[in-house]
Length: 193
Image 1 (spheres, helix red, strand yellow):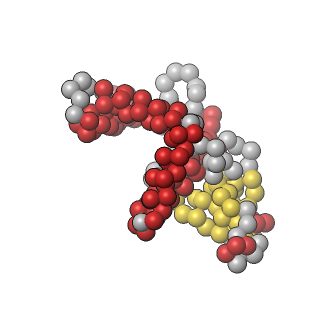
Image 2 (tube, rainbow, N blue to C red):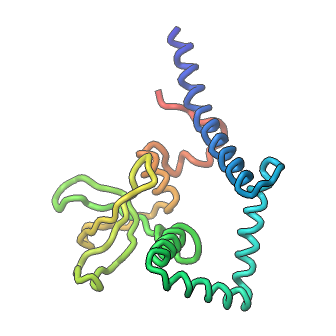
């Protein structure tokens, strides 16, 4: 009987992430299809990807830069729209694009003289512009959640680490369950016993 329970738990641990990922993808496909009113399943999602790529290509042309500049100026004039637009632009830019901000993983000593440490990402090396001398900004993502906090630490309590940014983010978001060596391995994952 114990063997059957172990098989069930192993099957649950292996199939649940696959099933949830497929379900989320299916929901996204259905939502985009319904927004665009297209009758073919997945056509809306493909059309959206093509449209985004087209906008990216157009962004490299002079004409588009002129048009985009006018749209951006209009958004800057409306207070609530300006806040929303700039916030979204900064957050997206922090994760993708040429100005990635979460590319410097660090380990932080939480208390001077203490042994507790936290993993995070250095986002600002100087806070002098805020009147905060000798402090740095570190973003600490939360485990099992896509949220986090920016905490300020004395620079001497922050140590860069040599791990890749995506490996550190996966480690933190998974609550320490996943590390860089867990990804890219051949074969199915072996659940912990």
